[in-house]
Length: 154
Image (cartoon, rainbow, N blue to C red; front, top):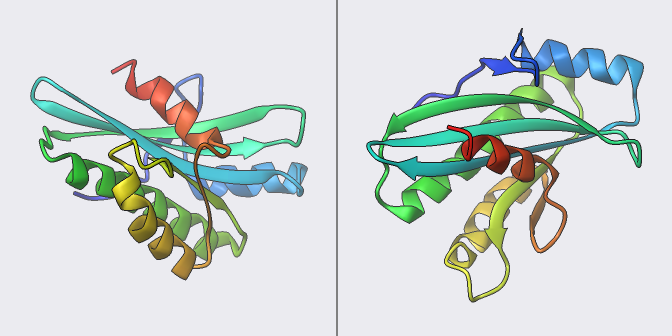
């Protein structure tokens, strides 16, 4: 399953994630960047939405997204691991191209009552080892909230 470099803005315009991020930073050097992925499985497909969110302090958030579909992934752990993989791949693309820091929002929960809890240590450890700050539930979830919104629209 390959990474998509095809991103769109909220109006549906195709954007290059590196160039778009560079433009945002040139106008707003203190913007914080969050990257996250969510997925939904329906019928015969699993749809993923990866979001790069630009947070302007207390003045709001702007984001771009990439939507990718695959044959249905029936195993929950494989699907959730793929979410982490996609977020890390996009983070690597952005940080290696622009030499900036980003935060990764993972749609996993630290609460033991949630199935995703079993992946927190492994995926967070992976991302941390690459130098990324990771946010998991119940903490801030800027990018994965937007990704969740777009997954529900498939």
